[in-house]
Length: 269
Image (cartoon, rainbow, N blue to C red; front, side, top):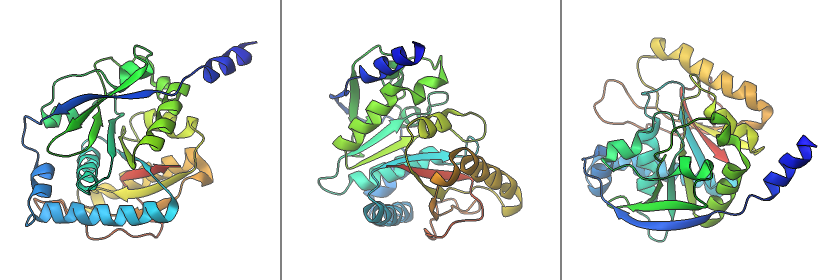
């Protein structure tokens, strides 16, 4: 009986409606946004390179939904997500959605200096049937913030409502980028990826610190993800930034399976 009721509830989840709530303007200067506006900026050039490599992989493998995660907090996942969304949105005609799915410690809205808005939390809690989006200018991408609701149950990230949202977002936007939680401290990103029963691709990104410092954490992060997703998880590339340089450095995106990784981008198909 319980299984039947749960199935009926899943079937009753309707396709969400995306509502454009208008344009918002960052009140704080963000190096990534400034760099992408400057044709001479090294930061801008490296994120444009990142965009080109990621788009090539996405086109080859029919991918249009990425979840950017890291091993631990403070390793650059939100910067990567914000920079990639901005770089992709600068191409004419491209509709890019950036989603704050890190409901525990959301940083993108804060870093942009945006006020608190309803967002992911309110939709997943059932407080609203529409998905409130705001277009960030300059930036050019649509943002779905984490919202004002507190995360009472992490399981909502793997709920039928989340599945319906991801399905609708993939059908509406050219690229959906999820700024997810770090892998090691909490299981939130696992719930998103595992419960949707989707085939995964992964891009290893944003290594911070010396190799000696980061090697154990990178190994644990990738090993953890591979363990819970089994053979469905596949690394699609690897890139890193230097702890010595003051700017982000993206030397390459390799399509070979890396030995380890600290921050990872998953593609949801």
